[in-house]
Length: 259
Ligand SMILES: Nc1ncnc2c1ncn2[C@@H]1O[C@H](COP(=O)(O)OP(=O)(O)OP(=O)(O)O)[C@@H](O)[C@H]1O
Ligand SMILES: Nc1nc2c(c(=O)[nH]1)N=C(CO)CN2
Ligand SMILES: [Mg+2]
Image 1 (cartoon, rainbow, N blue to C red):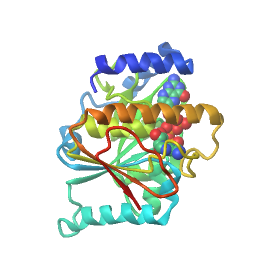
Image 2 (spheres, helix red, strand yellow):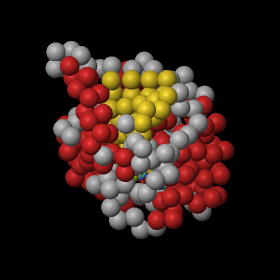
Image 3 (cartoon, protein in one colour):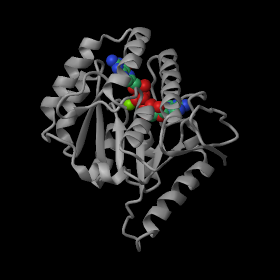
Image 4 (cartoon, rainbow, N blue to C red):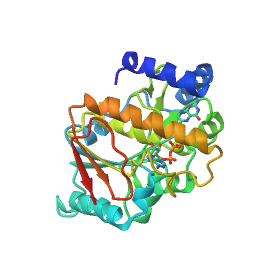
């Protein structure tokens, strides 16, 4: 989504959650100085363009074996397509806490979308395995950005504020909905959503210690709204994978599959 279209949503969210947008901007500048690359490597874009993006959120459905088997099935399909060399036409995008599940399943996500408030060890392991780290700067993660970004080399910087020369704004707020904005913005042909249980309890793979449960729930509702708004106008075919324990639904989805 272009910044001009994103900006009104950002201003409303900032007002709702009392976010000082000046601090968001300051941290974008901070992140910009910590990233060496000037522009995104076109290879990153081509990984998603016209391909199928599996976007994995950290909702509680990913704790269920049926969902884990589904993720593995898609991943094995990705691997088997070209004689065990990983085929490029399925791309795995893990939202923050979901990275840990991916690693547990033996999957290195192609992209990890994070504001660095999750499990640092998992991020380091994914990065060592080759994941592209899509790291988000905002006013409440200045310390994390400053201390952790220098340890990653394969980074795409993002912001919810003004984009800078090497810090992008694809739209979106929480790690989960920003993953969907990334898939859509990089022109995925198909988007499959897993673990996007915005109306359910906070998942185990989400932050273990949630300091403010009410705020977290508010953020999930914002994420749900943003995904619906984006997908309604998306060119991608969108499938939402759920289980009978989670009846989250949102606009813009072409197909539901209840496992
Ligand atoms: N029930 C759920 N519990 C947790 N995450 C969920 C749920 N449903 C969907 N998600 C998506 O999974 C993403 C990853 O979760 P995680 O808590 O690791 O990220 P987060 O956005 O950094 O959290 P926070 O908003 O507290 O910073 C969330 O950003 C959210 O969009
Ligand atoms: N300033 C600020 N921005 C955010 C915050 C937050 O806590 N503070 N949390 C987000 C969801 O992960 C996304 N953006
Ligand atoms: Mg996070």
